[in-house]
Every structure is written in structure tokens, then in C-alpha cells.
Length: 467
Image 1: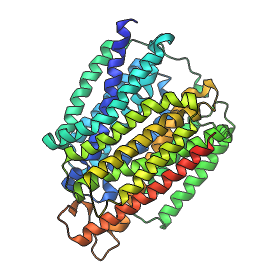
Image 2: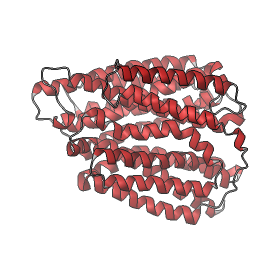
Image 3: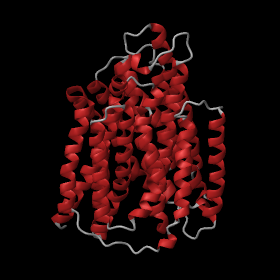
């Protein structure tokens, strides 16, 4: 195989791991950011949710726009925008500028996440495409495992601002590699009339409203007139979108696929599975640092073991599911993950770092066992000419589940923190806080984990139904 092909993989692998490092660094840095800006949990959650909105609402429209431009140009432009957002975030003087910077970064991340696999499939000969894709997926899996630890070390030694600048510097090197190693690729001939621009607008509005409704950023209350109006507008847009897409020759979202059991139940399992997983990833760094008093490096190390479980299981389940079918792996994976979530909830008042780490490993192992077979189950239910759009759809479902899980966790915890005789802001809580305040947080954390375990158990049922 031509060595130039391997050079193409370098910037793609670096890109994927830069964004994993940025995401995990942001997650672990949340307690420090909350303290620095004196934030409520609801407002702090928007540091992550802002990116989720962009990636959820923009994934499929941006994917279609990418088809209109030179692939190399679009990839480098997306990478540059993302790095610009990360560097801007390091200089944010308040939380609103930080949220804006993360939003800008997410626009670029969405574009690069679409282009990574496209670059390999477009530049590698067919007989080497499998090798190229496997190199990327393996490196991403390793990145999921090690970036929480690296993020924790950066935060412990340099703080979140300088950590973002280091990530930005690595990204600049990646841009140079992209210029040097990624070849020019032919621009696809696309009929503008087939782009379903109206469908894209509907989709962006629906997804944006969805996140605003479930997170209530303006704190009007879920039963306020404003919130009710948003919900009505959301439902109306969904109906109009459904009718419009069913009459479009090339819809952005093909609703006919939901008539297939594997597609419908596989989608349900995917959304519920990532909902439960994101609850854990959002809350645990806060719990470990704020309540238990662990360092950022220690918290990152525990997340490292979760990623290790995911890597081990995903390297096995993907291949074995081709031989034994996907159901045994998707069902077992979700049961393991749900059991781990439930087990973690019992450690709230009697914390044991060894047991906590073991349960996080089991959770990661369950997610890894389920992830690839779940994707395979959905993809196998559609025709080959839909693989590209359905792959984007699967990423969309993942983002919806992640967004909903983060919003659910933040909402439940806020309810508990404001329900006692003493109300507390998250920025005021630490391991030395009064017992009553710590009890409010711990009860909220435990309740959220129990609810997430129920959600993941339901996901295992959906996995069983997706024949």
C-alpha cells in the first residue's frame, strides 16, 4: 500500500482525538469553571448543551452542505472554525462568552466529524478502505480511553484555560498536516433542488426548540405560558416536518424507515442508551471532585477505566456480532450498563473508590458491547444507498440522547438542591459543606442514577425487540 495513504490518516486521527480531548477536558473542568464564574448547575450545563444543540440541529444540514464544497476545503475550514472556538474559550471573561466559544467550536466539530470517514473512503482504494477505517475507529476508541486521563493531568497542572490553549496548539499542527497530506478530492455534482432546504430549516428549528424545552434555559418553569407555547410550536413544527418530508423525493429524514422493526427499535435503544450514559458522564466528574474531594487527575483516571471497558468490549463485540447476531450483545451490554448505574447509586453515602472504578469499568464495557452491534442492526435494515444518510442519522440519535441525558441530570439535581430548607448553588458546594447541603446533592445524584438505570433497562428491552 502507498505510504501516502497512511499519511492521509494522520490528520484525521489527530482531529478525532483533539475533539475527544476537548470534550473530556471540558467535562472534568466543569467544577473549576463553576467555581470561577459562580454558576448554577442549570447555567453551567449550557457550556456542554450549546455544543449539543449545534451538533444535534446541524449534523444533517451541514452534511448536505459539505456535498456542495471541495471536501478538502470543507474539512480544513471546519477544523479551523473548531480550533478558533477552543482558543476563544480559553480567554472567556464570563460564562456567556465561554458558551458562545463552545458553540462556535461545535460548528467546526460537526463538519469535521462528517468529513473524517469521507476522506478515507474517497482517497483509499476499495481494497484498503477497510484498513483505513479500522485505523481510525481503533484510534478513536483508544482516544476515548486515554483522553480523560490526559485532560485530568492538564487541568491539575495548568488549569482549564491553558489546557484549552494546549489543545488549540495541537490543532494548529493538525491543520498543517491536513494541508500537506490530504489530497484534493473531486467536488460532488449535486442538484440544488434535491437538497431539501426547507426540510433543513424545519429540522434546525425542531432540534433547537427540543433542547430549549427540555432544559428551560430561561428558568420560566416547565408549566409557564412561555414554556407551553414553545412546546405547542415544537409539536406543530414536527407535524409540518413529517408531512413535508413524506412528500419530498429526497427527504433529509426518511420516516418510512421507522416501519422496519430493526430500525425503529434500534433507534429507540440507541437514544435511551446514550441518555443513560450521558447522565453518568455529566454528573460523575462533579460528584467525584465536589463531594468526594478527588483531584482532576484522579477523576480523569476513573473515567479512563470506563473508556478502557468500552475499548475492550467494542473490539470484541463488533466482530462476534457478525457471527452470532447483534441481539445477544446489545441486550447484554445494556443490562450490564444499567446494573452498573444502579450499583453506583448505592455508593452515595458509603463511597469506595475501588468499587466506583469497577462499576465505571462495567458501565463502559456494557456500552462498548452494545454500541457497534446496535449500529449494525440499524444499518442492516436499510438499503446500501442509504448508508451515508443513516450513518448521519445514527449520530443524530446519539446527540439527542446525550443532550436529553445532560438536561435530565441537570434538572433533577437542581430540583433537589432547591428543595430543602437550605438552598445551595453548585459553586458553593464542596466536601466541607454542611451535611444538609451535601445530603441534597447526594440524594439528587442517587435519584438521577436510579432513573438513568431504568432508562437503560428499557433500552435493553428495545434491543431485544430489534430483530
